[in-house]
Length: 350
Image 1 (tube, rainbow, N blue to C red):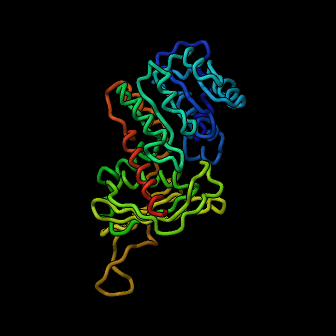
Image 2 (cartoon, helix red, strand yellow):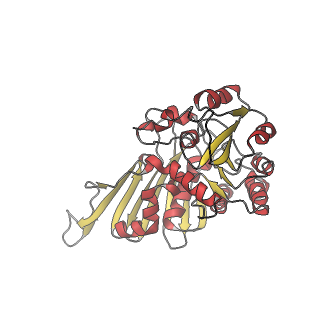
Image 3 (cartoon, one colour):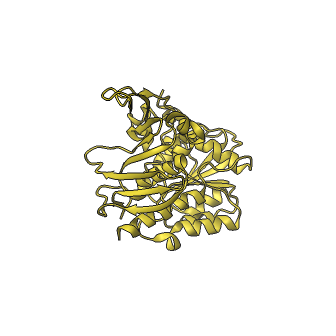
């Protein structure tokens, strides 16, 4: 129906739960607010962490920590969360969380994890480091250290890694559809550390590892971006298997797009509208020159959209990882690679 998240609040007051005791640290847009976006609800059945936790049987959502009183009231009154407050230690003592969802900005995530002795797994929002802090001084390195010491698995919410269509493309579907990539183009906005990071991760998922990163234009402040200090600049990524992807920033105050255009030697794949539309354009005879071929860019075939339950599937993987029965689809080490690439792009610009 597109509004599943809002159908499930107030689900379990007074009821017995057997799922993993779960806490959310940071209860803003990604944690809850996006559920109320009626346009987003047309495509994403689970637009926020709250929408998933309100009904996922593997989790017993018991706590929310946020310094904002309105956020606490939202968690308590809208979602029926029994333990809500601004004091992390107090909520930890009441919940004894086995799962931590870290949706607050980077800064004290490692400290939060260190304060939860019963954790079995963690799901964290990107970026792992605040813009400009660098890998050595960023929160990501501290988070890796504390989790490695306890052998604690960490997933990072690059949601495209849980999307069924995109998983199929990464598992060989891209080569089947378009052959070997010849040229790759991308558009992002609202910051390099924000949606730029999403595209870097998505490209690595589809094309493999990056061996070189280079700025190819001016480094500017990402005006209006949600992450303080985030940047906008065009850049190029060279992949180990040969293709080069060039990405350009857009001003989201004009319009939004986070998209990729992959031209292979046997076809073209276009992933646009921030992942909502994926079209395949086949190879055919050139209409203007005898004996030549072209990509039929006016005859696209739209592939099945599978974004609706991507975040829910990320939580499926989180539960399986916590149980030791699966590996993370979006592990911390992979996300830290994205951060190193971003740092290299900014060094190139400097």
